[in-house]
Length: 431
Image (tube, rainbow, N blue to C red; front, side):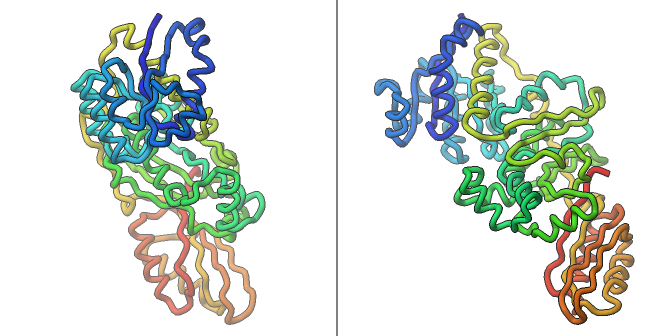
């Protein structure tokens, strides 16, 4: 019997789910899988959570460090969130010779180099399946199932909150504020949704995927991050007219001189597989040189899917300990070099542009002239005359253009007297 003695830090939504799952299925893991996963110690600042879960008093502590310091513990499961305290606890666990399982994407995105380097020195494992995609086994796929591949690209929807909001805006015609409020009422969005709607959560997850897929160290601050708070119902409607849907994508591409890594609202053709991922679901589309396109799809958050991923990591550690494995080759490869992340200004893309302009003759000619001088050509136009002198939307799609040229042109256009609001710029993928 492969036995693993666990110290669980945090009894929030995920921690409570992990505790309940291990308690309810302990006999299944012992009898069917051949592993004994025993939660020996639990820590949380709120003793009420422990009482609700009926954690035996002798196993509970309000002091997380006391659990990390317990010599009887084999593995620490860090589910407290945040980065400051979590970093110290994870590093201390590794120093004391314990393996670590975490769902903390921010911790790994911002402090991954330090954590993985120490794990390598101490010959311990850090497993983090639950950090990206909830219950979708995408990390294990990169570490094992797709190991034969060099990756050309990753296109992913890895934040369920923003995907739910954009889905509701598309299906019901709600504006951003109304869709966000509904997401909060249904539990898909936090009271403070900033990390989700501004793309930060997705960027944390993308940093982890890039590290594993492209094999190198990643500085989180180098990943371009743009959220959905500026997306309007008009953008959703005009995108539909052109045959597109808007999704918040986390994108990584192998490129000359480095890797493109960015989180951004994106126009996708309606026929694209990711354009049809709706609600709070996640999907990650890899393109490998051997396997081609591979899609992972499922619940990207929630207590049960995320707990499933945490427990899968625990089983993996139990099996590896029994086999006396001590090295994680994929993470070590990712520590060997720093990836050059390309600046957003250097990328080439097609663009959706929405201008709020005064309805008068010659407006399109003036704007297209500025674009033309910046080597940007127009592929499609929607221009509706409403009433002379009123402010109306002018929608343009461009052919491929460089971001730095586009930004210069937009700066000039926004200074024209005929433009009333800052211009909307959304990149296009999938053609």
